[in-house]
Image (cartoon, rainbow, N blue to C red):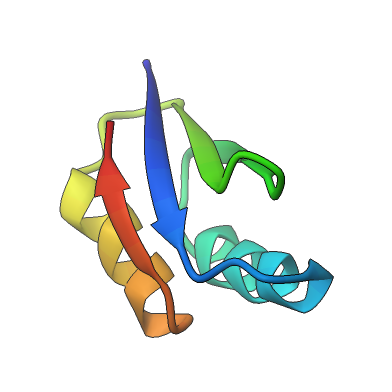
Amino acid sequence: MTRTYIVEGMKNERSVRKIERALYRIPHISYEINFAKNTVVVHFGKMVDDDKVISAISRAGYRAMRL
């Protein structure tokens, strides 16, 4: 399963690294961050609740919303 999230506030490569560190802690997912489009595409190996992904991005200091 794949889901796409819009992330507000990604301004530079440092922002991308912060989001990567936050998402790395969630088991059974892989992700692609597109700085130019302000999106994160998450690939789920097992079902993971949207709230976990959105909360992780929020804890990194950014606002995320599922497309």
